[in-house]
Image (tube, rainbow, N blue to C red; front, side, top):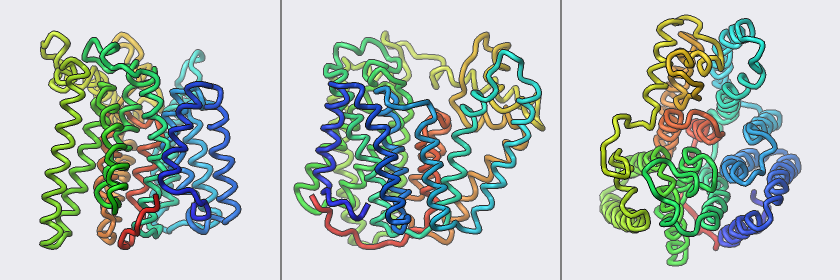
Length: 446
């Protein structure tokens, strides 16, 4: 927020301190989780959201969610999603929203038939409220975020500050991971996703948020580093976050980060003049060198197991039949559920239980797309089509949004490997709907 006098460097140091403090005194994570919305609400209501304070607070919450979860700070699993929804609603009260946002109300309406089916067909031993919240909190959070952000004007510098708000807690997450497992060599023994290198938490979600952090600090390094000090700070953060993301052995977040960076390269190259394109080639070359260095060091630290992981092999070098870590079976089962229930689906949250007959066990979905069609039938297809095409249509009149394609790609890839268990895909999707006005980046204060 604009009234805060912290510098970029001091905020980085603050989040390093937060990671150390929570590691030494775990109960501080609860206090941290409590203070974020309290302090955020203070600035939102004090300024009546004149500077889109709700976006900064929500972005910070999104960046902090995995850190809070892995350290026991969350008061419940959907804590951050609830808070993001609250702040987005506050933003609407203060600043209203675009008429174009009605499409997301229609999106939510399309989800209602499956909710009714669940309430009518679920057995008595199933906690209906719990499964509805678990499966619909993500789409609901997305719809509310999108309602507030669609066509809302921001300048490019403001958008970058929103990204930095996501990035600061990712720094705390990365430092905490180093404290939790300082020696990677001792805990990596196979090629499966590694909880020990992920702070004892789900590697998929850790990889997802670290992948987003990679993109944040890559943009800081390439577009907003005006001095050698900036380059050193942002380059170091990029390297450390990339390394810890790779050693989670969860590939989804890393592939997503790579895709986001490639999209940014493509957009910047396309819109650059001849002089800019020549500089772009140098940046691309240096990015390649950094990537090779990170990968080489990671390979050494993991005894070459990371290479086998990304080659889809086990520790003995044998190729695995399943390239998506068991997700193909779940996705195929959900497609079969849709084919058997094409109109209304099996009911919101019910695919997990319906898959028991086919897979022999309850397995949560990792793909939001196949879950949507399995549980919501044809209504789920229309709901997904709304989400897919609305940003693309919005972008037609918003070509200055340099991050659009990267944000859109993050949402699309993330919901296919991590569903919407965390708020990040919902919030980043909505960021793709902002109306961005390009402004020459100012010197970043350090």
